[in-house]
Length: 261
Image (cartoon, rainbow, N blue to C red; front, side):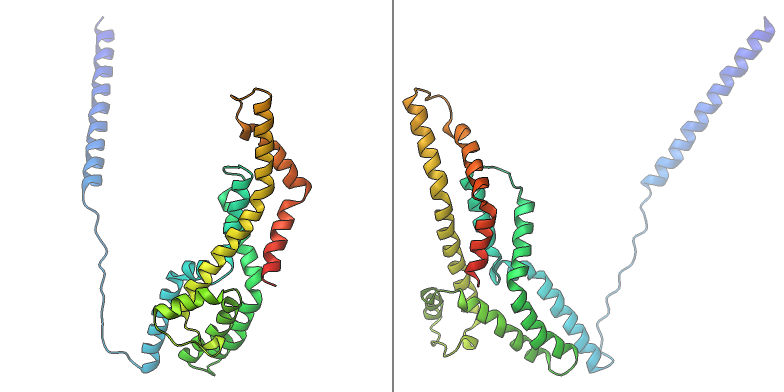
């Protein structure tokens, strides 16, 4: 009896000691986690540059960061990306498809088509502005002036004269003699609204055959007395079938590329 009681007492004491040790360990960890972590110090020194070249390199880096921050706006407003992605959105809506193809697929395809269409313009900017500047043959201002010329010529070719005149007259700017004399502040918005009009015109032409299918299906269902059956549910397979039979993606992309030829 004493031996059994002694063993039970030791087991009770051992369990109590283990529990006390775990409580102490958790308390120490909680205090360690609650202690504020040391923050790294940040020092910003503004002083005189060691040389004009160092100051110029710093300014160039800041300008590069600024350009990268507005790169999405340049991609959307100064390239063919706007027309392509709007036409793709019209195609998906005309087919009555909600998320097929997904936005990532449409935007990715529009991006690669933009690079394909803009490749001659990008090559001209690289040849006339970037490479001479990297070689030290021209200054930064001269490089920017040369880079604007191919971009202006591309946008001016797709811009309607009345859209350009709208922004020129609003700012009371004289009529430019050549394309190179058009200010970007007027050319970019004029090019954007011209691209939107062209994209909406293409979207209207895409909508017509699918609208006819919707009307035929709705009339047929009504004549059969199936007024409670949604026409969109019945017309969707016929729309997809028509789009596949005529090779719709090929025709849409071909029309987009032909528009920039």
